[in-house]
Length: 371
Image (cartoon, rainbow, N blue to C red; front, side, top):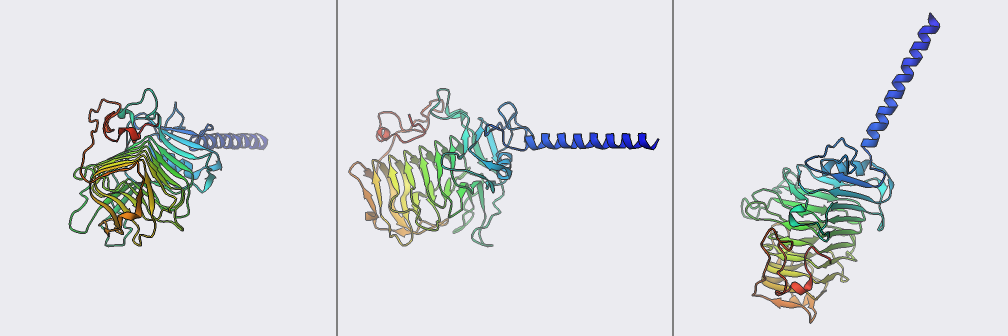
């Protein structure tokens, strides 16, 4: 009797252990990165307990970030977003501790279909919109509130092919107060190698202000083939442990910014700025407060602006006028205080929100397409 009891008991324990192991392995598999390094997202069909494969996609960018942050290992990881709306009700932070990326094996957050693909169209871009409370107060308790959308706190990252909106908030409730959303942020002053490419940043200061699409610290910040339309400030090179080297802006189209197009607060003098078009701008460029560095501008156009160069400033202001000689314009640069561009406004056109072919500035190749 005792032997039979011991036999049954040990059998039950073995079955429980087997079930527990199998269940744990299954859960770990679903909570880990797929073997090919690709994590698929679909905001309509995905479920955040899925495996993250193309056949079994996740729903949210937040869950994709959680899995990357908890993973152990190395190698490239690509997060592919299908078309649809991705509402961010909290900051999505990528800060892996035990997964290591390199220049060649990087973290990529991208649209499944990219602008250069034959079957791409403007309506196919994944849409990122921030809806979280503005409860972050970087300036202290008196700060009216800030929110971050996607926060990158690791090196060797590419963000590609996304349509990025701001947040539906009343931006300036009173004089000297600005409530603001930063859709893409990197705070790490010692981080390196961030590329943001082929993204469309849209805003409307009355309905959905896009205060500052890209706020990036550290080294090796490259922004190329992006379109910024009716945002406040386009790109701020924010903070760094030393002057930020290997930074670039090229082939970008910046239209209707009611702040400043470029803030070169920390970039070193090796900054490469070329094949960009800025039109209908409030201010073209804001230098650091000490305005020590000079920058070369080549093969670009600035047409229709209120002020050319300022220095200092911040979230609630644009500083004061600075010496325009700090910007060294090449002979292939067009600078006109008055003027207009011709923009394609047909939403069904592949060239939507780009310069019309054959018009002023179109030869510079600024916009989402690299081919």
